Length: 343
Image 1 (cartoon, rainbow, N blue to C red):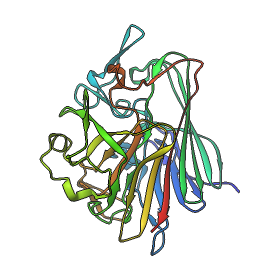
Image 2 (cartoon, helix red, strand yellow; image 1 turned 90 degrees about the horizontal axis):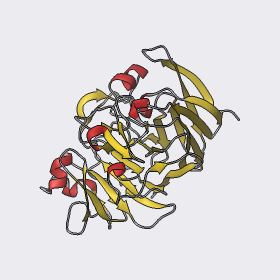
Image 3 (cartoon, rainbow, N blue to C red; image 1 turned 60 degrees about the horizontal axis):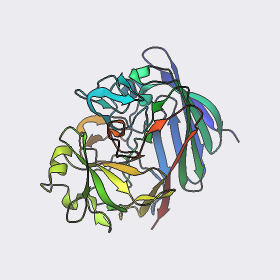
């Protein structure tokens, strides 16, 4: 069976955008704009509900979205000073957060129109070719993301190749609320993260180069804890991020759990799995009530949780961090999963 494919609109520059609907144990709506997960219907104790924040129009996604559901690249998170040096050459990037580069620059992958390469009932592959020099990054990068549903698991499989040495850090920026989109804050969600350390960040979100132990801090989610229990703690990293906006260093390697989050009211449980070295957890701190979701309700700080499976921020400028360099002849592969159940 084929996926349901519908015309969604045109960008302000006239590019055609489609919406693709996949269905198995979950129902997922994707946009070719930004590789966006626009809706994710997951089962709950009282029936299915949309568990991701989003917007109602393409124009809103194009002009106002804080990366709702977007596929992020060429470099997720931040690069300090919008520059890095690779093989003796310094590359100047576009600045879009003060002097820094955030989520790939002014027009990162989450603001580009992708090509639908293949789709069937429960899987779709989106293609984006990033040209050499786009947003200042070197190399022509060919990237594919395969979104597939298997039962109640949504799997994102990334592959990429380059014709010049470059840096690459990819993620998905969905904002989750397991009680349902537009239902209010996630402070009563229960969260567990198998991480003993976080990356220490300056006030501008740029790493110092050090790792901090989570023991005795509001970042210790090694045992299940209410998300909102310590969000108003006076820890410097909480103050700098206006809430949770931290890169948790995951234990081990290969596919493993990055986070387990649950909502008692709906019975929904989501396990995030990845082969990446870290997960950035962000509690939607910059939502102000100015955006309205498809439910017709406004979004405020704390109304969602992002689990951005990725490498460390600013890795190209920190030789001690895991490398994000991709070279010609090497195929980049990565997988992340969102596994849903009802408790």
